[in-house]
Image (tube, rainbow, N blue to C red):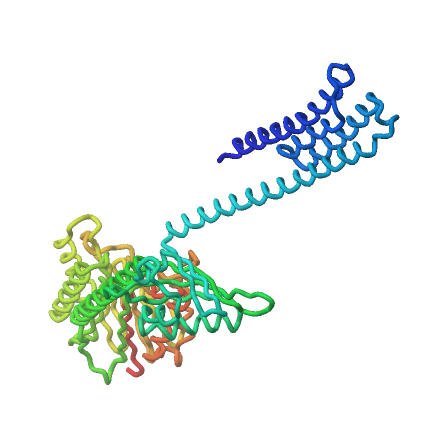
Length: 506
């Protein structure tokens, strides 16, 4: 019922009560008027009709008011017929007063019963709404009496446990037999703890129906306390079988997805391992460290590539990155690495080797977005010749500190027919050249920050990890990479590759 309708109903009831009140008063006034006019010989006792009428329809207060008017009317009538003079007043007053008092008592009792009936009707409406809510939510109720040891269930709860309506005998044994054997200790321990601690409890358990059907039930209860004693427990039970079934299916799906991802990662790792090069060089003459780490979004397969091979012209190194992150990008990276090795084995200089890679990228381009970056270097004991195509410049660490090897053509990209120049820089042992792909510098300076780590911070970090001027050991390379990742707050967003070449003597 809407608030407006409720207000109208209350107003109508109020109007009805006013009408009833005035009806009793009107009767008394009419009797007095008739007697005063001499039209009828109205007895004094007739005025009690008003209070009695009010007692049957009006409130106790209205009945008391009507009774007061009845006594006044009786006094008027006795004055008119001379009763007050003749001495008959006492008996008549007693009759009228007793009648008025009885009317007031009757009105009070009737009001009490009407209030009790209204409360009962409201409780019945609340009980019905509660019953509808319990039915809609698939819940049953129970009450346990500790004195008798009997538990009372409603029909819904009997159905949940597989009992015919009215067949549950209220015993503990009949109930526990329907609880799954693996859950019996769980539910009894939860109830015992709630009684001991006088606190609510909640427990999820399985029920095995006579048909063999398995159902998931969630019970919530609390102790009933009277005179500081626990006299029983009460609560509700919800059938959550559908929810648990969906949760189990979701968990199974997650497990299958996890297994699928594991198998995919294993296959990707195997492929990536196959794509990584086997460096060929004289370990007694050169310090070489290589690292490859996948980015957070692409697991183990990306387009970063590198290679190290020693020829008669010196130690040749390449590091590069193909745009994109996929098996196709990884395949192109492997093709570029193979093309580079073939070129340097034929005696190609760094710039000539990048020209070969440029032609390979251009020939395999499937759109304007297909490109690659690379840095090719040839090391000799006292110098390094290098060429860069759109790739981050390497860092050189020696007795003078750490500085960038800038080739002047870092903006050139492979795949667009641009010619890259070469730069030769003298080297004085001990020295270390640190080459890397852009995944190392594209992380953030802090979790959630928009500022990238950048070349300058990487150069400063490299300086702190030098074991001695110009010497960066393999263990320090791993620590450096870990610090960059820690600053970012998670796995770096892009793949990264690192090739470190060093020499301690001429």
